[in-house]
Image (cartoon, rainbow, N blue to C red; front, side):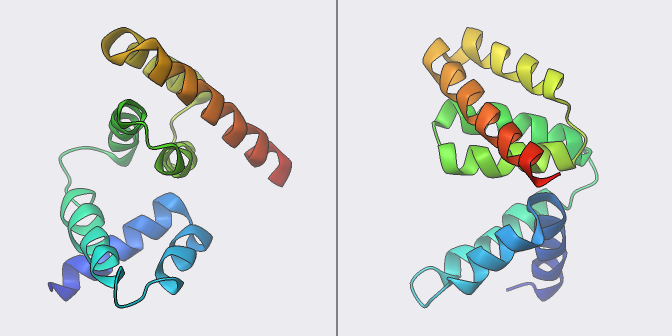
Length: 127
């Protein structure tokens, strides 16, 4: 394992998804799923999110479209929160999911809009 990439990834992951989310994921790690947590921190968040070629906002926008298309609601919720943290507006999220509807299917977009509304309501309740 590349410790530098791991630490960079953990820092970025925490900045985007939030300390509570990352702490929950890592505290629940055991011998079975620890290798996945290591992979996420080192490669996903360190090697890819840590690259300078795209700003975090753009990476978040791409993730919303891809995760929506893959029908991964748990991950979509986390990445909607992360996208808001990275400066993606609700209006931009609307546009992303409309694009999903046309290129990947209306059902994927309908679910994504529903999930986003849940996240927006939860976030509004925190204030």
